[in-house]
Structure formats: structure tokens, C-alpha cells
Image 1 (cartoon, rainbow over the protein chains, first blue to last red):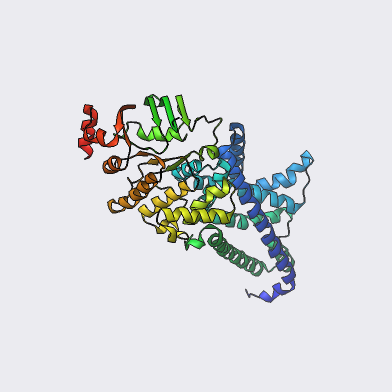
Image 2: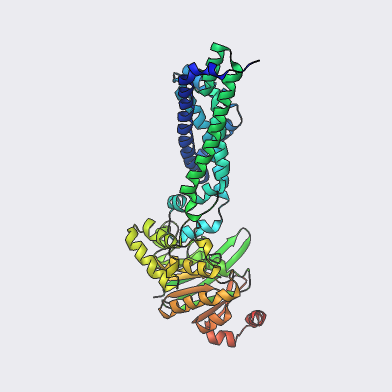
Length: 223
Length: 242
């Protein structure tokens, strides 16, 4: 068998578009998912019991079912209830919900690792629970679990390959498209594999940089 | 009128009754040392005074206002009562200056410039003005504890509660912290300390309260009480710690 990567050249535009779709949907899902997780942890630890039960149910539901089934349910299942979404919308929702569920549990561990004395100090200084959360809890909690959170976001990025199954034109969809056109499966999937690898490595560096900036680089801490 | 008034205070953890009816009055400017064995209820009493523990029955009044979770928010209470802990509890992700500025800015809504000026003043008071931009982890235990004192003082509380604040320190660092307390006492600050520093209680304190099995067993003028304890329990305690 002879390898000929020049067979991919006519598809450069498609590859770049696929890369952009994967990157954009990952960035959006990561930002939304982490923001949602921060809110969900707050309500899980401070909310009324029915709310806590609802949040826990959501988490268990998302953590104990396959991502592709969640995706299919949102894209193919919800129209039965009158909710029709574009493929990219369904993909973004599925990825956000999935990441939020895992991140909530990760973040909860980070909050629970904070010594009780920190909460007591905040309280005797007059901070409300919300102020304590914002100024005293959030950064150290993030710091506690930052590597785990980074991994989870990368897992979601890699898992996004699945959204090609509902015809989102992401990187994997482009690989399938190229291979079905020129039958150069090896070249197409190898190149896309390497792009995913580069994305994962780049994402890890980006998280490291963001962590350095927001979570303690000022302190010269390694994260 | 007393600054702090405690009347028939009861507190239980499950079946364990820790405070069995405490009556105590403290005047403004007094330095009161609460001593007693571990488990005698002294820390619980202190923690009830700022509602870190809620009491089961009895009355606590600070500056004429009854402490009650429904009427006293943490923000309101922090105007009356400050607290320093055994383990400092500085916020590790904030600089020394930010630690002191946090509550004035967040709780009182002070502008950053005013809060910073006040923080520098309080840090100077505890001898750490040059540590404004340092991180807590770069400081010794004694320095961290003095920052914690400055942080409490920045809210101008009427009374400062100190819960064994020298117990986690290396012996050579205890003196620095006690000197700060002594200076506060001389400036007229009301101090209530749970402490094992008998020398400090005798020399700086006005009054010593000896707790035993959830009750105030004996109390009185610091020098008299420690040199001439009346009850066998206090005699035994003093001979054990000295």
C-alpha cells in the first residue's frame, strides 16, 4: 500500500471548516458547562431539598448513560415533544449538559476539601453565604480540582467526534466525508487523529495558562 | 450596661450537654481569660458569642442587642464581634492586604482605596506593614496570626474573641502575638480569650473565668484568682498547667 497525503489537499477547506466547528462547539460547551457546574454546585450544597434531589437526579442520569444516546435523544427524540433543534444546537446542548454533570461532581469534591475554618472565618467577617462562595470558596475549590476539570473538558472535546453522527460538520464528519469520496481512509483518519491530538495538547496548555492567570499564577504556584 | 451579657446559656451536642447554664457579664474594655480543661465548654461558649454555634436556650446580649439568628445577620454581628482562630484561617488565594480588605469592601461596600488605607493602618498596628503584598503561605505562623488579628480589627468590632490563638504557634512566636494583644488591651479593646497562657491571663487580663464541666466554676480578678484559687478543681488545674 502506498501512502499519498496529497490526496487530501483538495479537501483542505473542508478540514479547516471541520476543525473550526469542533473548536467552536468545544469552546462554547466548555464555558457554558463550567458556568452551569458552578451554579449547580451552589444549589446542590445550599439549595432546598427538592432542588438538590433534582440536581442529583440530573447528574446520575447524565453520568450513567452513553453520550451518543443523550445526543440522539435530544436531536431525534425531542421533536416528538415539539422541540426541534438544528444539529449543532442539539450537539451543543448535549455536550454542555454532559460536561456540567461531570464538572458538578468534580467541583463538589473541590468545595468539600476546603477546611471548615475558611467558612467560619468568612462568616465572622460578616460575609453572606453568597459572598463567601464568590470570594472565599470558588478559587481554592477550582484550584483543588483543576487538573481533573481540565481532563473532563478534554474528554468532552474528544467525545465531540460523536456529533458527526447527527450530521454536524465537525472534524470527524469531514474525515468520513473525505474517506467516502477518495477511499483514502488511512490518510484521512490519520490526519484527523493528529489534529485531535494537537487539539488535546493545545487545550491542556490553554487550561494551564488560564489557571496560571486566574487561579494562582500570581502566587507562582504550579497547577 | 454590660457590653456582653450572657444569661442561663445552655448548649448541647446531641445528648452531650456542653454548656449547663452560663451567666456572664463583661464590661467594655475588660480583658477576660476563659480557662479550663479541654471539654469544659470554653470554646463552645466563645463560639456561641458570635453564633458560630447556636445556643439551645438562654440569652446572649451584645451591646444591648439580643443575639438571634433571625435578627442578627453575619454582617450586622461583625460590627459588634470579631474573632481570631487557633488556625489563623487566612484566605490562601488572597494576599495579606487583600485578606484584610475583603470584608470592608464586600460587606461594608468600602472603596478599594479606603479599604487599602485602613488595611495598611491595621497591619502597621500588628507590626506587619511591610507584608501587605505577601502571600499567607510566605509568613510564619505568628505573622499569619497577627494578620488575622489585623483582618478582624479592620471591621472595628467592639469585642474581639480569641480562641486559643497561640496554641498552634511555635513557642518562640507566641510572644509576638501576645504583645499585639497586650497593646490592644492597653488601647481599651474588649478582649475575651480562651487561652492556656496563664502568664498573659495574670499580667494583662482583668478577669479570669474558670470553666469546669459546662459551668463557670470560679471567676474573679486575674491576679487574685490565679495566686489564690478557692476551689480544689481550679487548684488542681493551675498546678497541672504551671
